[in-house]
Picture 1 (cartoon, helix red, strand yellow):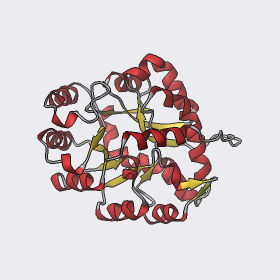
Picture 2: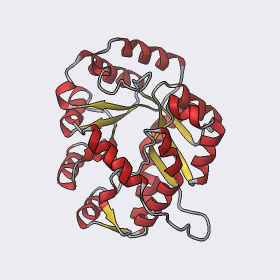
Picture 3: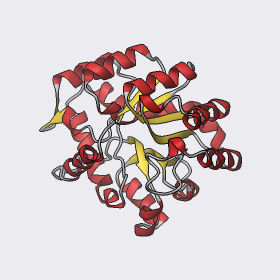
Length: 279
């Protein structure tokens, strides 16, 4: 399991990325596959302000979830073509660890799945030792029944367990599992319906140049890598535009077609099967 200390350290490193000058003309679109607009963020930013930030960042789309689903639904209502709703199994902060043992989470998910439209379930935190628990298993069954993408903040073992339970699942692996290319590559090779987001993976590029190991992975799996800003605290919303600019910067170190795929085309392809249900 990724420790809270490591996660916060990654947040700090990402927040301190140097400003990136915008290129002349329209910036390359970005599909941000990892955005949260939780109840505390909604207290700091109005829906209109949040939508304005996403648009200023040049996002084509954002996969949005929140602790408490109200923020997600509000953003989607305000910008339905931009903010794609994902149902998180958390009703408030502090449920990252407890949700797997809380049967009331299932009541919440079943209620929201019946009342509103979604493209995904997640981001949820689930690790290999937890995957046999009744609540996570039922959540995966609900995703299967409603045919939804699963956005998993998990180790490799949990991802394997999701596919063991639902072989036809489509899974977005948050933060590429906080693992290196030596782990991520074999996982992508094993599971054809597995995508990764690179939220908080700033180590894959230094000085605008993509590291060789990651470059090889991107070339080997050009259709299954996405990017994400992960606004997991309200303060992270101040860096959405900067993160998008930094992403565009390091993507220029890749062949243009590959850079565009990672920037937005892969996210579009991943989410396309679910878009019709939002109409």
